[in-house]
Image (tube, rainbow, N blue to C red; front, side, top):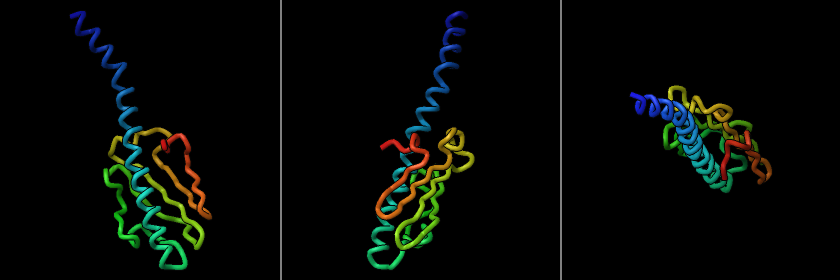
Length: 121
């Protein structure tokens, strides 16, 4: 009985840390989707005077490949755009405190990642 109690205590301590690690690794899904959008935007811009205003215009889905984030574009102009990755409700990423919304602002060839701690590169 003591062994079971010790195991339960250890599991109660370890499980939140494990979940945090899983959420952090799943952020790569948003990073990958943002990189795909960046590449598609540059291909689009090579043939047009501005960047595309919608993810669908680029031939990409609005959901990341892993299914943890919804991707969107805003602030589109001839010199930049903003990619936003929003954690999908009902997935474990929705509980990723501080990183449920990740943005990449592309302006004049310079990326700005926000919040910086969520983008592990």
